[in-house]
Image (cartoon, rainbow, N blue to C red):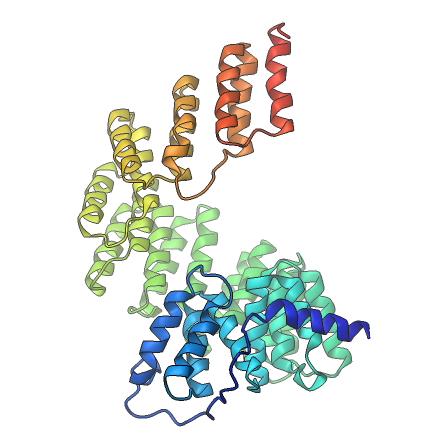
Length: 479
């Protein structure tokens, strides 16, 4: 009875699609030759655009209502079509909308395969949390507790940092004689790594090979990562060398090694690894370009940073904000101020969407160079446009505190409401502590009272901070 109650509660919590209509979903149909490269029939695209738009931060039930309205006005939908929408929404991290689509399907009697139940389990974990995911998993009938759903729950535990629960689940899988596949072994190795048991990664890898299951890039990534964690760089290098002889090496394995070499200040070895990563990466994929550019910056190699940047720009028609962010962070690391200004101006002329994180890099660079007027000019301009964020507040406040100009820092805090308009903001405990430390050391009662008023205006004065403020009165001999 208890298990049934838990199952009912799990389904109540995760199901948001209203079952208002009795429309039957059409059976899956073969994809026509007219499908576009995204896997959509041309006729599927209008509905996808509609549900994609309403998936952005709207209340639960909006996606389901959109689907109901489409069915009222048009013909039936195939399961294949809806599952294609789920995949696309998941790809763009619109997890609430993707989950609501699966709920909508089930509410109309569609039978999800074990693979799609695993997808739903993953979405429940991301949208409602690990407890809801556990409840959903245990609410499934035994026939649906397949290798795929077990594997997915293992991964969910890893994503939520609950390695011990994942390892407990694996023991239950063994008790049920569920034979692990490559994906389960990969999840298991990752769980051991996260649980602080890197030595068990090797034994799991050997067990996998003895079972006749071939390793992939994720397997080798975790294996090499485990040796790095154990400070056994020699073995990590040997594993990579052995892999090079038998299979193509994924670029991420070389960047993993390069990152570790950089931590050990073995910059020459890091550069060699990055060259190999560049040779094997898919040039049409943006992520490796950004990763390699960032690691060259950590090596302090200005020449390579600029070479990669030019190659990236020549490869892609449009340079995205993410790449500008990585490049400007890199130039800031190697202290190439002239190039930083040049590329920031280039971004200002070419960007489609404004990204305050990029502007904040330029503000910090100006402040680091003592160019306060230039930094303040940008702040005033972006504040007038409603584009500042909490990062802007912290950069200025910390700069003025570093200069012991606490009054200027307090002015910035007083402007915070005008700078962070998207949501309610409160300074971090670390930033509050820096202000309080100054007032205590200087026994500045007038200053701490102004600070108290500022915190009150931000609606973030708690009992702990209030007690700390009172300490300034005590030290100054005031009641």
